[in-house]
Image 1 (cartoon, rainbow, N blue to C red):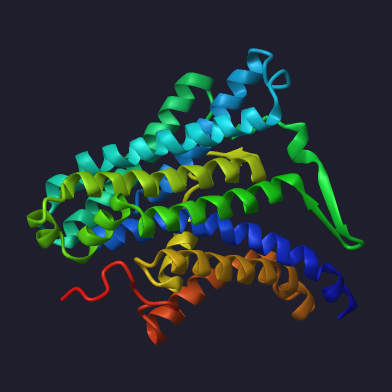
Image 2: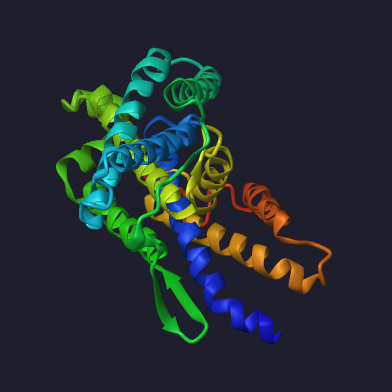
Length: 322
């Protein structure tokens, strides 16, 4: 019990960091579902694309001898913005090529297209990195600022990279909430989500709004990818599978189509996973270890689908649509 209480603050921090990662990825799922009512299973590869954009920029700066010459804040801003923009544009291209031609068709067809796009993007990333660097397992260069720690209490030391994840995620989630609920473009997104036919009659360019929704969701995924790489260092074309599945679980947990629900679901899932990784071995006397933490994501998904299919906060973007 003493050990459990001693590590509790660190477990909470780890869970919050992981939860914000899942929340940012889950926003891509929840926004696309809110507008089109289908799951974009290629979103996990958009997330990985953001990770690769970040690591490539850092490696280029390192090879040019500029990584330590530039202010760390400027370097971080560059990789975050680049990861968001390129991932957002890739998501828009994906919508134009793989999803828009299938609008009005059976949802199963769009789902199959999403799965195919996921495999295509995985192999495209692997091919590009194999040709460019002769390897597709890359490590983020070390930034001295991110390796520093901030002691909060006697038993709690928080790395700067964890603080970066938390602060950046909070700012972006707040900005997204403002964008969707307080701007004309956000109003157009909600109108298309509620009734695309009526929105079209009101003069809203539905296809442009859908493309913009993909861009915003992809940008959030790209941001999560950059933060993931900065925090965990190693990336490869398959790094997005497990976080993508768990982020989808978080989106369902909070209420698919519900932006605050995506954040809540991500936080709940991140904390559950952190507690499982740290306490399973202690509570079971070593019978179960941290390797079983992934079971919790799927167990939560099954329980939510059985007992509360609409999620903790329920659907929101399409609320009231017949």
